[in-house]
Length: 349
Ligand code: AMP
Ligand code: MG
Image (tube, rainbow, N blue to C red):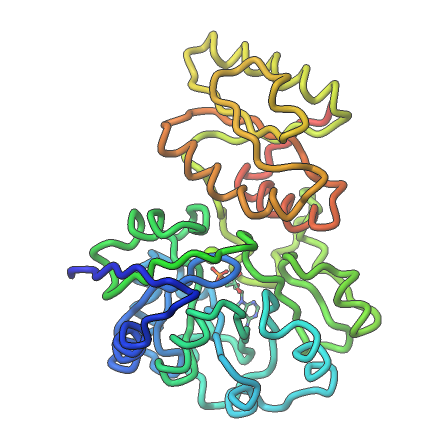
């Protein structure tokens, strides 16, 4: 299959292009599109054949449900059984934006889209290209991240092209991927709302709107034996090709440890990459040191993390050492992705 790649300026959108992309979805095809979190791989959420195609293009296990993207609030009611009052408050506060809400699904949504579950994950993205595209696609676009299953989610079109070329009909290349980590997922089907995947919208932000919110305990507890509640969180994920290890401790001892590990790895003939920060990047000894952002600006860290993992792949790095990010407000989201990328390898110093 030939994949059409079209650049689209989100400040001056070519509506004809978006209409063409929407038509592809309505005809059962697949289109990758930019959102404010990461690139999505879209198909018609109400067409079971489209969902099957998404799983095939990603090489994703079919029990890992997709997120249904909508562009207006009126479109929520038809795909769910009921909308609890708290969900209206959530939508008012955070939609359009990087929050995915789990609700009980209606019969309109095929089980192929929800990985066999009776619940459906719904999000309304704020990216202008995503919004118009969803509208032209008929209102319901099922979209996981547009990467081959297991690889870091794409925050740049070139990585979508790398993973999806020849597998899907069209790639919309647009910038404006400001957040760089996937949406927060909150399950609203139980008594207490529960975060299944941390993201830009933090527990504190949700609690201001909802009152008490719990967190799936498997998210950060690396010793927890229970399976995570979001099926997708069970798989190794976000993984670079090199072997990633996180080092956690005081700044000074972390740097010393990473320098020591780097020396050892280099003497074994490994190509070593280091994930540092603006504050520490000059204190390392390796030759491939990348700053993921400023600790004083944690949004910058979220935005850059996946790009760095992909760049280390491009540079064929075999071993990666990273600092830890537990102390930031968005640290839970960042550490959750890093821990998965590292297959939970962490050294405490
Ligand atoms: P991705 O779109 O690649 O970020 O993956 C979607 C994520 O949403 C995966 O982790 C899924 O397991 C999760 N998800 C989607 N639908 C549901 C659902 N109904 N219940 C729980 N988690 C879900
Ligand atoms: Mg994904």
